[in-house]
Length: 349
Ligand code: GLY
Image (cartoon, rainbow, N blue to C red; front, side, top):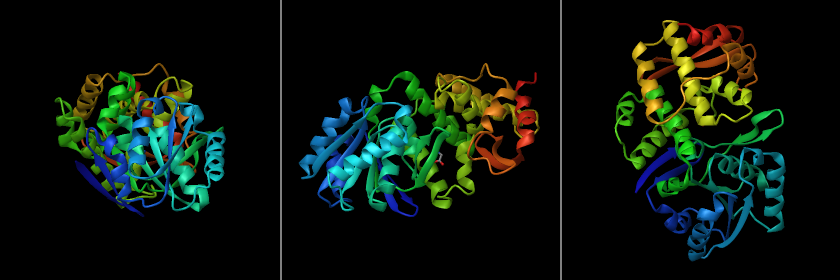
């Protein structure tokens, strides 16, 4: 079993191994001595893995409750959060109990935020079941729900006590959802892991891929848990991506939008003389290999306007993640008035 230790405001392990879900109860017992556990999951994931997890937890003597909500980003809101809080209150959950998030990013974000706020903070454990949540959202303690005004606007930095990744759970993902995760995997290569980009050109082992990404994220989170500096590198491609997601009314998935966003920023950086041309060739090749899109129907004007609704914007400036070469990105504070001009470079012939 692979184990990656994260040392943020809380120290915890991310465990990676095929088949680990059946040992979840035993692994959780090592870090949670309380009486109750509450599985939080959605209507897609619970039917596949809920009973297996429940049995594993009950085997360790836990009293197990389950809260299952309708699958989809539209459930990541304050209504579902209040329902979850009320469920925990009705079932007399105390600070010595724990929540277990079984699912993708929506489940992890919602459960983490409920754990951060219920009784001013109870323990939670992440069991991510999508590639995207294994390599990104389950690690690092960003928890949130969406508001009508935008995605992830109400949230907290709150670390899990343990993360269990069982790549067997990826078998039930559609190809598109798997590809979504690969966009974030390629992102790690582009921001800081040049050798890993070469590995991704081969048929790499999924456990190794997850471990490499989790270690890269761990290093960033250990240095900048609160997203004030180096953690912003993880937003490579995300500024145009948020614009594209918004313009498409979320019919373009997050991973696809990140893939297109990375292409836009890399092309624009090459055009501006900030980035080595090879980076673009390598990025495009990998995105195609993993069936990810590389272009969009939206114009640079539309994308920059939509992207500037992004909450990560600080006053009149925005921090862009600029690739210098394949495997190295830097942060560049840019005046918002220059965003459109900059990304327009990606459309120049
Ligand atoms: N998903 C980006 C971060 O965790 O900072």
